[in-house]
Image (tube, rainbow, N blue to C red; front, top):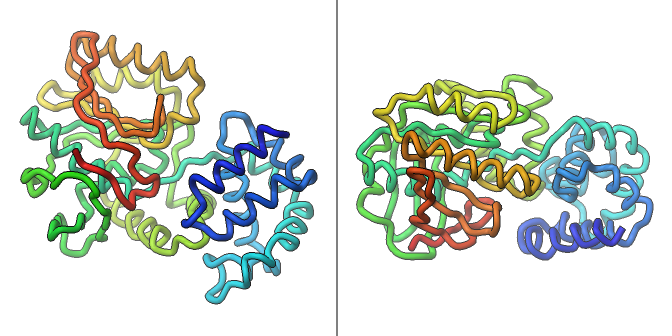
Length: 337
């Protein structure tokens, strides 16, 4: 039980504090309640427990007329005080225990956080500038593939830097707390291939999948919710290849099929924390092996630390080229350096 308490306490203090008053308050109360901790214990070890528990609750609450709806800013215009939410929250959880456990074993934490595109975009441009090749993007843990379409979105980084890729697209604003972005930020990003891999591909045309993705977005985050909806519409008109299955089995065939006139970029954000240790090792070994045939760029975080890494792999060796220290998980800020 101490393990579950630690996960919710860490979630509260590191992630929810200052970002979700509801989840911050509930996280501290859940770990004090034996009945709720017993329900949490049903969550598979591979999944981040607070995220899956809260998403499952929000998903079920959105489907009911329960009084608990009145505490969710995502479900009511004038939410009731957070400090009054625990008893109705617990009552709802106990009443829907079986449904919650079913969701724990049929759903995954696989958000498509659109605003992370803000720090991926300049990194991809950097690779394009280095190689002078169009990119072949391969995203691990792609979910619905919204980040594969990042060149269709507009960006604002502060200090007068605004990138317009399409007049009628969404605007993603992120605060660059580091050095000024290079001049190539205004270049046109050329993407030849948009490929996603996931154990469970999300079909946003499917109502259940769509509603689950909304449930993963925290109740107070109305802008995230709106950006997700708008990005979903934009991405639906962009050609992507989405593959469901084991990434170590799929990657070799996919990379081999790509034109040598493109630069392969394998990337994943806030996914590797769900990888078993052996899978992390297998992935790195596989990428090194594949790089003996062609150079590969690898962009990732949560493999070993919270920093965002850009490595160039060639001839079986990995060279660390750039690090963005601890970018915000929801893409609100990053530090270019």
